[in-house]
Length: 329
Image (cartoon, rainbow, N blue to C red):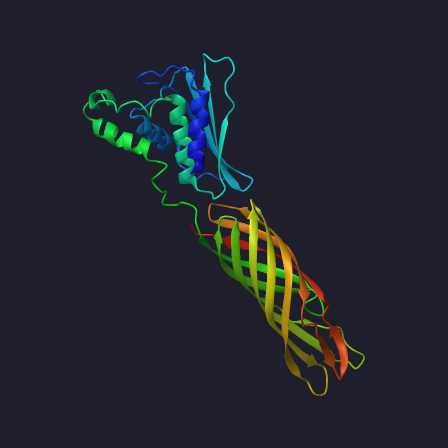
């Protein structure tokens, strides 16, 4: 991940004036904020840094203080690393790493790399420590073997993460309120499925509206109609916001009631339009979605009763929806 290289370069420059010792020690304060409960805990972070350095650098009292947090902000995971040394009058600014793909493993790897370089900037250029230097007691030696630690330190950028960002499926369901698709406001339900790759997604949506009855005519008759429609929605995402183009095709079901000879009929429905949407993450895979859209009817029609127009579809209709989106990784 690009955050690895940026974190390594920036923190190395910030610590270039600190003399490297055989074993640099530090205090660690680590916290997972709301929305980051699935990210590695403090024990995992400590073990990851120890593996990169070839020894456990964390003690209760040390002149170097490392504070690290992972939390969710503005629809993405964010890691903040702050390093303070007692000998420095002005501590450097905290370093912020982000993952818009909500990948805890990859973000935690970049964070532990940044912490390791902050503690010991020369850890990657120094030869591997001898086996007896990593653990004075024989028992813990297998857990602190220098050779595996050196391999882990030198290959994080080339070993692909098992949860690396890529194309993934999207499944969702929503309630839809519409105006202009029937003689009055209607309520419907929608199921959708699609695929997302980075900031682009494309969904296929199936929607069914409840029947809506028109006002009674002078002769006492009414017209009832409902809509079945499929919509293709390619979208461009920017954080939690999205803009979509819409292409819809379906059928209008209509029937006359309260007349001597009831009659039912179907008509073609086709429309194009645009949508503004917001998707707020509840967890790494589940999101709440809401949207507003406008559709231009390409096949306007009139509902007739006893040879007279009862209701004519407007050229522009609107809809609002709210639901849940599941994006398994």
